[in-house]
Image 1 (cartoon, each protein chain N blue to C red):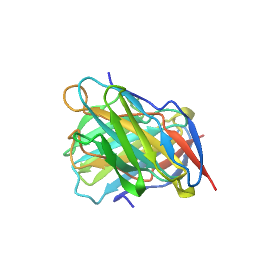
Image 2: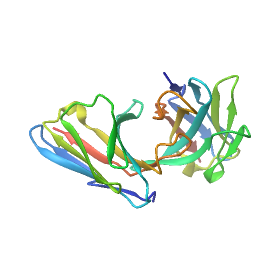
Image 3: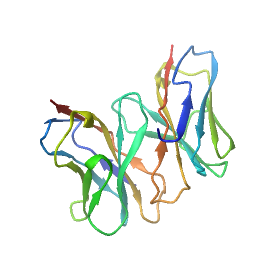
Image 4: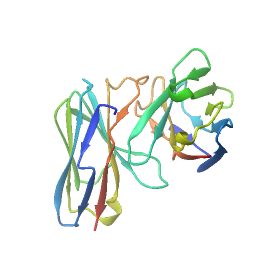
Length: 115
Length: 114
């Protein structure tokens, strides 16, 4: 069975500082990995995905994520945080083949960026 | 906006009421999903429709009944709900069920069951 762990319920960072939101996964075979963001009173919005190729994936709003197969991780990063980045972030995984095509989501990490 | 709309945005109902949630997508997608989002819990997949056919029912109680009359519309009919069913119900769509495709989510319906 596939699973996603987001070990931090909340991440606090000062505006202008780099941010990292952690995600580790478990899946049979190769993974397809996704990050979504949820702003208050909104649904989830797609940020970026890793399918194949370059381990560093660039996405919307200046976010990027690094796929590390040996550590089964897909951490979300941004070089300089903005107050407007404060939101709930979800990591999701699907197996590239076999198993269930349904994505499995993590519990979410609340990112708070302080002015 | 993501191209997926949901109505109503907020709903309060008693345990004996019958109500329906509506989802509409304007993206030309063929797969639609219902999720339940509760605080401090992972997103729970409820139902999946692909080309109007239900392909997944994730052991959802029968008090939740989905309907997909066409590829653009998805309903969730509710009856005799329990207080623990109070949650944010999210609709999503994707081009199809391919594994490398991202989903587009609506803003959700905040449901409170009294």
